[in-house]
Image: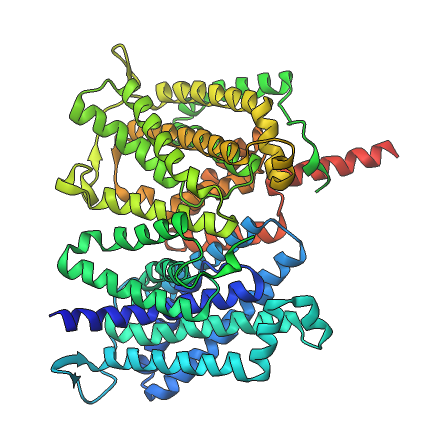
Length: 290
Length: 327
């Protein structure tokens, strides 16, 4: 029983972790928070469903198409909204509200496009479940965990060892100095939003087959991603993953052993307690301090 | 933003206030004359939203702290008042005040440790609190809040005089709104108000000038929670039925949208904001399933095009005219 609970906790925990990772990237690159990440996830799930189940494309093709479209969406959002507002030097609240407005547009745009019913992915794999350590895991759930881990490694390599990744880290550390070294901060910020949106879309493709695809799929995941990011230490990539995974497991354990009623209260309670008592999170990330 | 450093608060001049009040007094007879009873209900909503948004203005417009969770205090006021009346038999006028006081105490307890959080993290903590309250009213122990089915209540009554028509509630709401605006004006023009503005402009400098930053941030938060909770209680006894979906994240965003649309740091801003956003939402009802999509789009367009809000933009326009005349 416990093993099964831990696995399903890890499935949603990986998603929280990836979403939190997207937040951390954006926060490091531009000091902003993105309140529409959850709905970007929803759009990703719907796009994936459309390509795979409706247009009957092979899964890998649907996967890649979704991610390409999501990168475009993220970069469009940065170009059309974020950069324009930053150029006007408006109060940060306007940027927060602008991303919330975009989240309304995405969520309700999805209602106009796909309606309000739940869609279930047809099975992706010919085997329905895999057996690990004596427990059966739904193939899609196993895929979600494996793909998340692979994505984390890919992102780590990208950020640490590629020219783009170095440019991103450099302009996050000191935008002026990075500019002097020939890095274009505007480009790296646009890239960060693109990557973050791609992560969102990918999460949608991973969690959609497990949970089903519906309009509010991403909204709660997006907000809980913040909890994961804060628990790990906001702005810290590895903290985000750890915090997300921990949150997923705590939530699932609460549901299994206490009551599903208190699941969300526990998650948001953790977020609140961490913010009020230890805002720098487990990794003691200083990005948050003055 | 040249006027941002202007520490003198813009009060409404006497004649303007008198004209506005006369117009406000004439609205219900006018609307009932053209047989638009529903219109009076909408105006009642506007009045209580003005109270809530004015409270939010104290915390955001004056002390510069963001909140994306004021729906929680709106909920505590609404549910608190109903439950005090239903389970403890408290008279409704008092239950509204007690519930608002409870919300204020909770607000202070949260605001004290939260006051050292910076902008985005403060907004996250308010979101978290908002979600917790929402979940608790949605899934309360032994369903004391009626959970997802909602809960019914009675209208406000003053010694047997029931505010059971929209017109009656409207005049009561107007009185509450005027009183709350006067109190807010007094607060803003007091020493505390000037301290809040100093904190908004530069917290370090305010600290250096001997202002207790934490204490004043908590005061601002406490005032806003009382306003919001009282508005929530008004909502509950106006509609006489509440359910959790009125108190979601969306409601907190609505308050902030009204404030930013109307304009922050002013007396009239929340009035303009509450009025225009409520009317807009009602007008969009015609579009049914496109309602929220259009709302989001308009919100985004206004944020990009008019970052000073309607009030701020009007004022800038007026200033431009004045400057032209002076030449």
